[in-house]
Every structure is written in structure tokens, then in C-alpha cells.
Image (cartoon, rainbow, N blue to C red; front, top):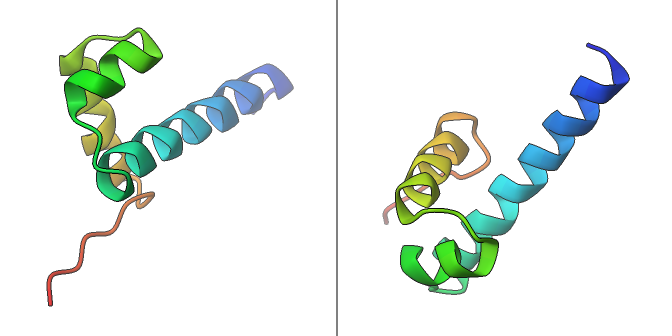
Length: 62
């Protein structure tokens, strides 16, 4: 992977993590997150799914 692609990948992972923390830990709604990051609410939903798919987020029910 080129340095530029690595930078994009790291930035994307950081953004997925930041959005996930806002949603799952801080309790922000997808609408609030979409306004904060200037992205659509639908994109927030897709990014939360991507974070789960990539293992950034693991959900455990006890």
C-alpha cells in the first residue's frame, strides 16, 4: 500500500472510531453525528456498519 493510501486508511479508521464512540459511548444520535461531521445521516449509518464489519466495534449483550 502506498503512503498516500495508508494515510487515507488511517484517517478513515480514525473517523470510523470517532463516529462509533460518539454513537455507542456518548449516546449521540445519527442525526447529531451527521451534523457534527457534515455528512448525511445515511452515511453515518453505513459507517457504523463498516466499523462493526471491520471489528472496530464489537457488541456484546449480557
